[in-house]
Length: 342
Image 1 (tube, rainbow, N blue to C red):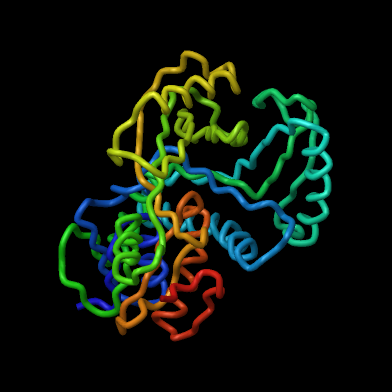
Image 2: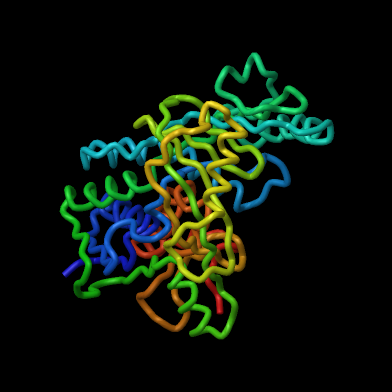
């Protein structure tokens, strides 16, 4: 018997399991498709903040979660012996015109107000940006130090191994004992929509690639809606597409070819880089665009943690905290905009 069963071995489910263990709970994680089989098993791994203006509960939640990440991934790595690829490398974004420059400079004040001394958001020139940078029509960039990276597949493997190392179970089948958390990705959102009769959420397919190029320690790049992530193992993750309609969830096509080509145009050093892997998966997108957290209405003892979409890895530490507050301590600290209500 366990205190908590978590259905789904993606980043949200596994991080909740790890946090629950740290509070003394016995946990079991069940996923018939294995660890990181969904969108958490990808190759990009950008942990990025929203802009530091028009502040709200979601941005505060995300800030706190990103600041929790170094301690989480350090502890998980130590327990598992598997490097999750976490690094606080920051991010560069080229500014395309004067309007963007003015807006970016205005956000510097927002970062001082809301991020405080924990991180910075600044407008820098090409010299300050360094050699690893994309072209910028204005010669200026946003550089923030809050952004970080993980290698998603290695991170979920590290979490699973850490949970097992601390006495938990990670299985493909088993009994659902104790409280139950449903962290079942886009299939889970479809099921919630079907049961409730409401548009709770859906899946958005993404395609990405892993390239052979060593830029370890360099900042991640976000340019022309493309993420370029220099992993610590000497690879580069590039992606991704956002496909609301798709025939097959795990296949790649010419849309990924375009991403690889664009990555070489943005960063010429990547032209002709060997493609190590082509990846596709479906990300769970809640209709609210925020994670869906809390008790499952009408099902006592059952809970939902879903809808990470593109920010699941960045949100996971704080999601685990508030879910364990609720389930283990009966202390509801979930922001109103994140609640599952139907």
